[in-house]
View 1 (cartoon, rainbow, N blue to C red):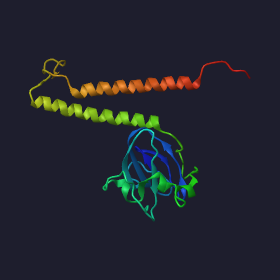
View 2 (cartoon, rainbow, N blue to C red):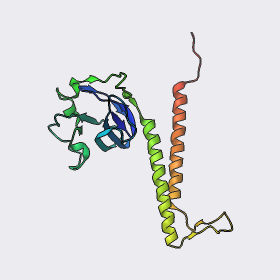
View 3 (tube, helix red, strand yellow):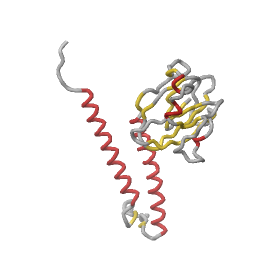
View 4 (cartoon, rainbow, N blue to C red):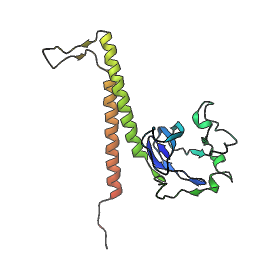
Length: 209
């Protein structure tokens, strides 16, 4: 069972291939072994057999090869020695290696069935963007709490009086608040762009039947 950013998309099978269009950034890839074809919940119910993060750049194609019996003859030249996709059953390989006669060109496109659904061969860019926003929001909230604690230690925080439930807070602007506002502006602009693109694709005119 193959997961991208904790979302399950397909169950890989022997001599098969599929593809996904993803958003640039760090994409987390995990493969778990299902029990009797059933998907588990989170990490406690399925054995984790591959776990790695790949930094994806715009406009590039990445070839990931899964093989439990034989590793590729060469390693990807762009990966560091300790990168998890440089060794093991799941590895990043070059396009030249992927296109060899005994590699991806000899496999078949992965089809769906009841026990092995294939929700790939599509774009998951918007799902990635939403996941990135939620992840960054959580990280910035944690940074904000840590920043407030530092300001308390530096005497730059006014505590709320016990007799008045309002007021109090940092005496200087928070860097984390600025970054949170910037994150919200970027996501709002992203949503507006999605709406404009949806309107452009749907069209608005007359047709004859």
